[in-house]
Amino acid sequence: MAVTLKPLAQQTIVITGASSGIGLATARRAARAGAAVVLAARNEDNLREAVEDIRRQGGRAAYCVADLADAGAAEAIGAVADAEFGGFDTWVNDAAAAMYARLEETDDAEHRQVFEVGYFGTVRASLYAVKRLKTQGGALINVGSILSDIAIPVQGAYCAMKHAVKSFTQTLRVETEMDGGHMAITLVKPAGINTPYPEHARNKMGSPARIPPILYDPELVAKAILHCAVTKRSEITVGGEGVLMTTLGQLFPRLSERIMELGFAEPAQSTDTPPEPGTEDNLFVAREDGRERSNQPVFTRKTSLALEAQMHPLATLALAGAGVAAAFALSRPSKAGKRQADIRKPMRRTG
Image (cartoon, rainbow, N blue to C red):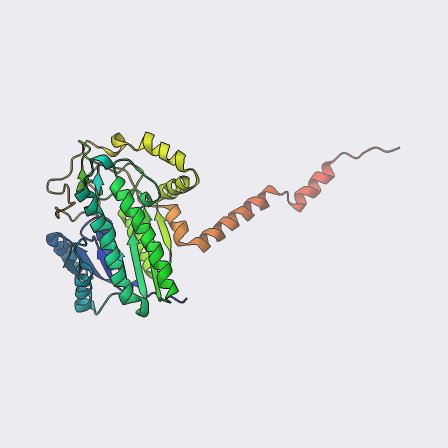
């Protein structure tokens, strides 16, 4: 089935969860590439600031205040895209809510809210985007997580939600292709990313939350998302650690669980750095936003060879093949060297 995706400079891209973190980084990167962007989130002040900043730099941007937990949010966002830019070509679902708490300490309302925003919000927005794009063409990109493939302590509700997003996205892609839809549906799975995620999450651990290292820069996720806006991909993982951990979880699930038990419990997900004032706990209410990265002093990787390999698989295979061929050639003696070795061999006496 042929799927034609426009160059970024010819696209309008809708991004939910765009007032901070991955969503904000993606909106800014897309605007720099020439795309028109529609930013959606709950915090109007931060959305307005982001859009004004993009426009000051010559970009095209608009925003829509929307809570993805509400029915009708996707239609409201789509209406802004229609009014400002005549529609949209790519829809990115990044909005999510999170918690740091053991499952026994997570009540029904909290668990439901994590799913209302991250799963049901993604479901409703995805179905709306597919309805609009499957005939005209375009891309739907859902931001998942490597936590859809592995379990980490004190983030059980979030893990379960991202697992549901993964299964939903895979099924939606299969059914859309069965119907002959001319669009790409992609799941992007980040590893640990240096965003305000731990500051925004509801936290019942008793100390400030953090994402355990290794951490990657949100620009890498933005890069992967925009690659999928112009290149049909089913799934892409951001960060070599994420590739390693998900592979380990698939091949050796019990070993993966033991590693999580021993190395990723509450102490590994705690820090001494408190959230900035006004940013803490946005599970039910919008809080102060507007930053791509956390306020914590952490080392952040700004490159990922694993991501580049997934984005450019043919080039990676060609380079790997050339490397193997070069190594093989170097390991074999040349013909001239072999002749010299033969000359130096002592003559056997006969008779």
